[in-house]
Image (cartoon, rainbow, N blue to C red; front, side):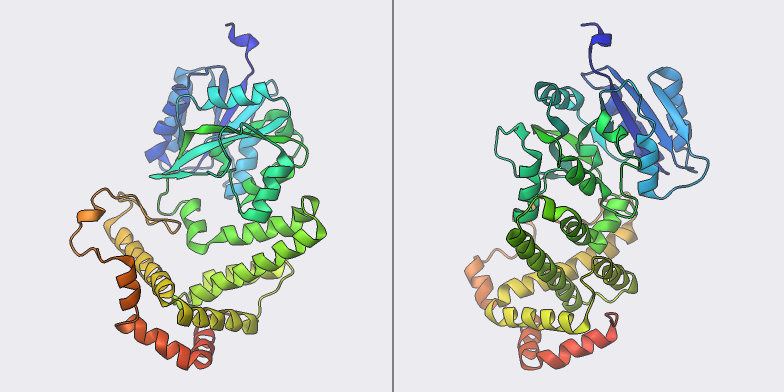
Amino acid sequence: MDSRLLPLVSIVTPVYNDAANLAECIESVLAQTYQNWDYTIVDNCSTDGSVEIARRYAAKDSRIRVHENEHFLRAIPNHNVALRQISPESKYCKIVFADDWIFPQCLEQMLSVAEEHPSVGIVGAYGLQEHEVMWAGLPYPSSLVSGRAVCRKLFLDGMYVFGTSTSVLYRSDLVRSRDPFYNEANLHADMEACVVLLKTCDFGFVHQILTFKRMRLGSLGTITEDLNTLIAGHLHNLLTHGSEFLTKKEYEGCLHRSVCEYYNFLAVSLMQGRRDKKFWDYHKRKLTEAGVGFGRFRLARAALARLCRAVLSPYETIHTLRKGRNLAVAQVANETVGASQSPVRASGIRWDKDAQSRPGRNTEPEAVQKRNCTRGPEGDAIRAGTENGTRKVEKALGSGAPSK
């Protein structure tokens, strides 16, 4: 078929100092089974040779061009600059981050859903985040979902299927209608953009793995996971947009649950020994911006509630504390070995086919582990916490968490 009769897709890749991965990203675009696209690589004042890589590819393929920022921009403003480069003739557009890549049939399958359902403004799909399949939740074969329905599931059930900017295809006219497209004050502006667009359009989904997201030390993704900025992003979206999707009763219930979950997360972080100023300043600021406010008394109450849960479910508590401790140890190990090793991921555990036979692995039945879980230092800590909970929480608050 004449390519001029096929819808044009504008692809953009914002890049900053990612020479190690940029070529793989570009090659994944070149390998697409759907070939009617143009491609702009937006270099954000890189100093590691990224722009030279982009220029070499542009010299070989007339569909590729390079845009070089005159001044360095922060991440979200740079993403907005990238989206301003899409062709005025394009019907669809797609971001592919420089440290990510897309599978060969990504554009073809996403366009198939979008073309079949004209009401669709965003198309998503499953993706790989290192070794983990992400963005599940929609029942098969729901290729078309009401935009309002999928946002209600996000607020009411926490079902998140939008993924990252690499994970989705946008209709270009919707992107052009918003400038800036992303809210530059929101670190999770991609999620908020989906919520805003889906007020007036539908959501398409391909039940195939079409994208790959790489987690690397120092990337925006690893920084946001370390701080758990997503919990603040969800609260912002609920407060800003939730009332347009939910009844008053639903909204109030979701808000109460979200704030409780936020303080529960902070309480667990406190119990795990999280004391760094950057972490606490960030969450204090986000709660204040949301109008909820940060309170030492409320944090202490949440911490005491966790101690009460320790009495009723010591196995769960020790598992949580050990997880926090092990992640911290693993992160130090990663930093010692270097960036060539796979980074620690706070959201899950890597699949390891050799885990069953690893020496030292606890192979006791879960019931036995639960029975023995309060033996040793962690069990002593739980018992001490239940006896002196208030004093220990107050001491911890005084040594690390910011005051109101």
